[in-house]
Image (cartoon, rainbow, N blue to C red; front, side, top):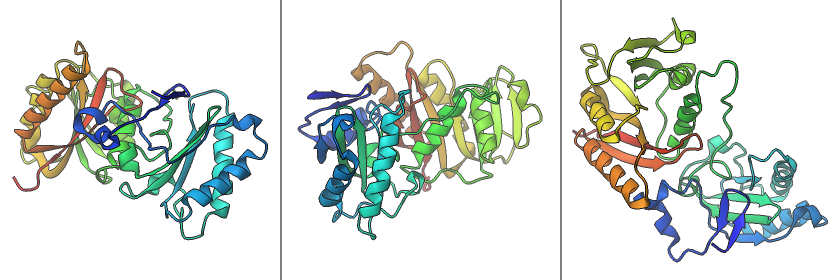
Length: 327
């Protein structure tokens, strides 16, 4: 590491930057950006910082035709709003002077995952910028994700933020299921993920040995089943657009339960699988566990799309699979 940047980032020299995108490495890196331009200064002590920085961005990247300009704070979670405000002001000024035919996308959610974006991070260490697609960086927002509130009176559990983050991240690789899609959720209690899916207009069959939170009683679109995922049998002729598994316990046991139910998953259907890693430590051991889970999933014609460590994951990773259309 060349330099520590804020609390979450490090400036590193990498002989093979593309290796970061390898299957065994990418899930350990929440967000990465090649540094094509940096200004190692203290913005608070630099007169005219915004105008100078904006002009530099235009000179450096104006002819590169980025689809969007996204600027954020190095310490996004800090209670000090100075750098978040500075990032917003710098973005606003840069967009004023960029050529009119570039940086046309203003909303991070509207970016094409595969097209280059000019991402910038700013903090007391200076300004660090790079041109790369959201998919290659690992997120649509500078720093990778956005804060999702999980402490409102309506919140059932933090798992709601986890599936919200997962669906946001999924958009880097494929469209999310359409409104009205039919989900099978395994390990649903107390219902944080269930509530988030219902709020998005999905139909949910939620299976768990423990009951869901009382606030979900009678919720439209919900079919709650108290029972074990091992013995659960879908109704005859029932098809699911997606399966969500957040079951605790051994990861290989959990994926076997998912595999058993994939005969009811539509071709092209989605699986969102939480890879629990309790008791597994070390880079090699974690990769071996994922390899075993991916191999077991392949037995049900499930292809791995991506593996990520979400902002709301703890000692776990989220894996995305898609059921092959040609079976």
